[in-house]
Image (spheres, helix red, strand yellow):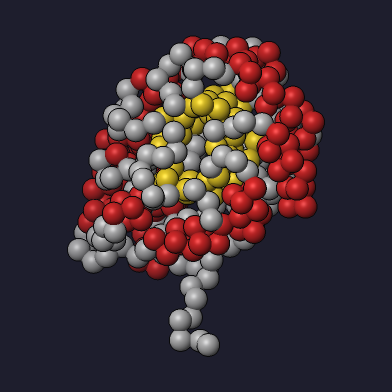
Length: 340
Ligand SMILES: Cc1cc2nc3c(=O)[nH]c(=O)nc-3n(C[C@H](O)[C@H](O)[C@H](O)COP(=O)(O)O)c2cc1C
């Protein structure tokens, strides 16, 4: 499933709730796209019914890319997880994935997502049950390094190594570290060296440079990329095919395509939704002025005017956002090649 390209690392789209839906998959695919598409998470709990996850089902059924799609589950109730996995494995998916990393308080307070990292024995039981239950497609897991500290990772690795997974994606932070800390590359490297199945390294891959450094530091079989491809949807093609950085005008077209793709159709609803993507795209543009103006406006026409004012140039969009911004923390520093 992860050997989509011979002798080259697999590039996967990270699961992102309220972002990685079918319209976003289409936007990425039109720009080269990843080798594997993850869905948003499907919630699994005592009252959930798989058939009600309409957006997720639409994405996997209408997947425009011809590439594998992997559907992510979040939950901790074993009978319900089995029921959901067996429902979804009949759909056009390459694998079912289990979320062991979400830090959202609503999820953690239900003892699911990242909260499960406090209970390795429970993870062991869930992996045993799901590995047995999923027979028609692959079974993968996405984890963080621990709940409170990365010292927890050794125990987690013991558990992961007991199970015949098809891949493990590792966001190299703890749950408490949210999105703020640097990435624990050494831990990902240890997992990549010791596990008998592919490991995907995740966290702060924002550019061809950070992609190459992450692969070099971890020896992972591939990369999973989230916020970096919201900021720049050409990123997969840049890493894989050596495509040139997009121009600002290409970023403008991307924003216009996002606008067109957004549901609900009501322009005010689209405006509030597109602002969530802009927070990632706009870091540093016109020294913060673009984001400032675009986030403040409540008028769709004004929004388009602001985008055209700041994004109509044919200059190259910077490969990385400025180092001092709040949304992308702990990015690998640029090495000074002249230093000895
Ligand atoms: C808006 C948003 C939604 C996310 N939703 C999910 C999710 O549904 N499941 C999941 O496993 N991780 C989710 N994540 C975490 C990402 O998959 C990824 O692990 C994290 O952003 C670090 O990778 P990055 O630095 O490439 O963004 C989400 C992240 C963001 C920013």
